[in-house]
Length: 175
Length: 263
Image (cartoon, rainbow over all chains, first blue to last red; front, top):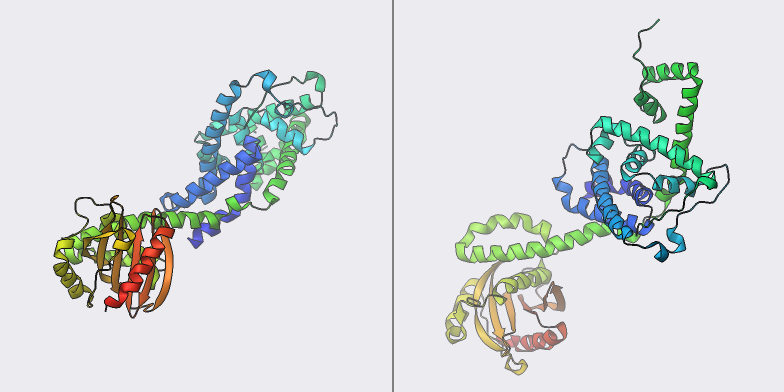
């Protein structure tokens, strides 16, 4: 049990960071991390003992997060535009050249889920391409092609943010 | 002229992510030096990566909220497992009672599963899981009924090494149903079962105490089963039932007041 705590605890900050940047909702993200930790504690002795605990935890978290977004997307479609509050409208109006932190994370939020996950795992969480393939359960070739598309798309989104004329209001709700 | 592998887009991303070994990294760097447009794209990706890391870094520096405290989650898990292990131990009690000593291998796991597996705390656990089995059994709650009280008390006395009397709980509305000898991790114990006219049951578990021979009454509760346990002159008692603790407490006092008749 002491070994479990020693191996899991140092990973918790990274799990929170991935969850929050992936689902873009701090409370929901911590819910997902809590679920992840509860599962990890109850299934600790079922994991592959030679496996990397970090990869294992990220796999659990990612699967929970994908399910969460799927449910949120179903609810989001039922949300009429008139009912959307100001905060649901993720519109950036900044004209600063310098990228503000919120801006790039907001732009990441506009990526398709499967591009966002690979970009966050590789760029922020320092997950190797092979481990990313395990976490996402996709071939390594798919990891590379999605990563390339994610980077190109994010670059375009960031450029559009710097040019509000091209900004289109859009509806987003991940509660 | 070297015959180096051609540079792929995968190499460029691995360059950005610092995933290349030294030799390949140098090859990519040489290529970028010769191709400024590609180098500009790679630089943009590097800048993007740095910006992402800087934007996300503060999240990992926030203090961990209590609900994500692993120690708390492990403790909650341990308590859940403990309750389910009582249930399985209760099933094992049945096997022990039916099959004799065949279940002694269970003792090996008991200390891990029962952190307070001694004294009155252990007695309280035993009473709860014994009641969890026999208190809920409608066909065979007791081995000897109230009519065979003498035979029951003789059986219990022979197994726990001391004479037991049956406390009279009529004043609380409970009449004596009968009882049996049950197995615990600390040897044989006598179980006395009572019920009221609503069919609600409670039970008294009695056994010799090696530890905590004289202990004040303490309340305990395991899931839906609540009770009070104490010890006097080397004999431990635990009254358990599903009634609220404030109803059980005066009944436990009645048992204790009559324990003078339990030698």
